[in-house]
Amino acid sequence: MKTATSMTRHRNMNVLYLVNIDDTLYPLSSGLSAQVTKNIQEYMIQKLGMEEDKVPEMCALLYKYYGTTLAGLRAIGYNFDYDDFHSYVHGRLPYELLKPDPVLRSLLLSLPIRKVAFTNADKNHAARVLNRLGLEECFEGVVCFETLNPVCELGGSGTSSAQICDINYLLSVGSVLPRTPIVCKPFTDAFEEAFKIAKINPQKALFFDDSFRNLQCGKSVGLHTVLVGSSHKTKGADYALETLHNIREALPELWEANESPENVMEIAIETPVRA
Image: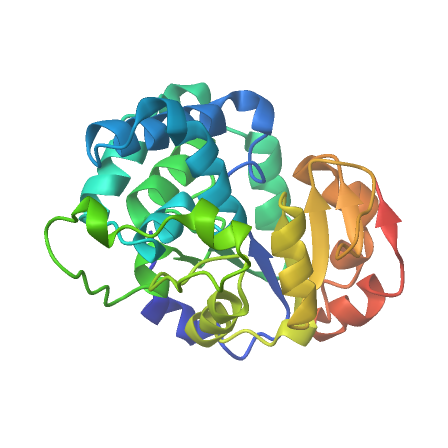
């Protein structure tokens, strides 16, 4: 997997695809995301000692307010090793559920446009997914947990129950929720960091994601946005694709403009698309 440094070599190419990995490069129906949720909840029980009957609701609540469960756990006071978390959550995934996608590989490689993957997950997970799909050569680099959070300070090796914030209570009384030290989608600091790392001009970039809120945030910081996984546009999405396999059908202008990549965005954004 290419590093952030290698991406700077292509900074003079203005047009760019910024592409989410999970449930975007492969379909939700693969079942991998369900396994991720299962492993996160097991981590919360086995490693953090949380009560089993409260974990599903807490997991969903933290994801809702903090973008990722990991970010939420850190915000409310849990301390843990990030590598251990990622190893437990992603290291045990059945990656065999993912199959090579030569059609998508061919489409991506045929595009005369910079392509950068953008994920909240760790670099090992990103690399394994891209490898399983046969897409590792399609992206000049990956913006991931480690690049968004190069220095993560922990408050200690353990956390007592007295140090944990009761997020349900804070919400019930309308209190401001504690901040997380983690940088992640769907918040603007994650996008701004990605722009710096990959030398992205958001005005000349297409952002592909399956998450409505990620797209809404991306739109707010200037990106042109593409919802993947549905043919119905939603708030924050300029385009909607059932699958990335539909890119050429939906946006043929991207290929027709291959002799002048600087004009690709000007051509594409004039034509709202559903496919």
